[in-house]
Image 1: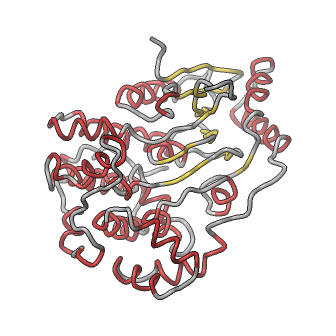
Image 2: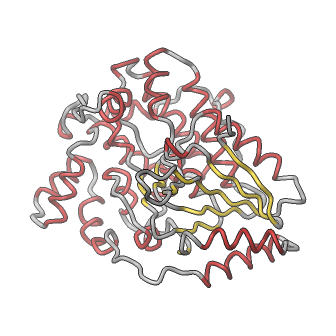
Length: 375
């Protein structure tokens, strides 16, 4: 069997290819461990001066062109099955995934995310820690976790809360899909480039290696500048910046919903429609997460989110877990009729939300206690 993580060093650039294309390169525990091993080795390897993360292409169907996706997130079917079986591997998954994301955020060498196709959830956790985030014409970005009874983890509290105004609350609660222009205007991507330009970049580096990390990054940026997208779609989020601030700056989730209901615009109605299928409880938890994370350093956000995700599976065990129910409805039974508890935004209490932030471990025993702040 081919490895789930492919690696190659080209002219000083360490290229990591996520290689689970039929699952849209969604991360499982084996991939997380392989990625961690590779990055730890490359951190001290003088032959590797920069690192690029990319996804592999899905096999074409009916004669169509292959489609590349960066990473659709974590393997939510595994989370569902492990939680129902009481498999402790679900704990290892989140601890090791968050540690991997932190490693990318704090990596001692320049890192690049080449974002094509679906870049969501755990894929955002990988990409947002990179120094250079390249958005291509096909990128479809989101943090849609409230739809499956989870919250935008993988440091989502950190990078969403750093968006301007109340955009972070909106992105985390509603989970809209973002295209290349949205990614750029929201500060979730740095530059844009044509997806097909990556192969010529790698070919050039294979023929003429770079001498230093600065030279290599300079060549990467110059190549991107030569292969921009000729047309960018209109922004779909920042054009509603004023309305997002007016509604999503409200004190509570119930007040946000009431404010949206009082706005009879097409955008407000569409936003309420998007929220209608999400877990009311986890939308409330997400609102609190993002507001807490806004004033927290990165490592503390990871530790907070690790505590939160423990509660997602332990406050209510097995099938009673809001996350297990959300995954059941979306990908297991596919009935798209989750039985949320509570079933309405109005029924969510402050005590229910607060329970997700209650400490599980003393600081010296936290599974992410060794994470340090970026230098």
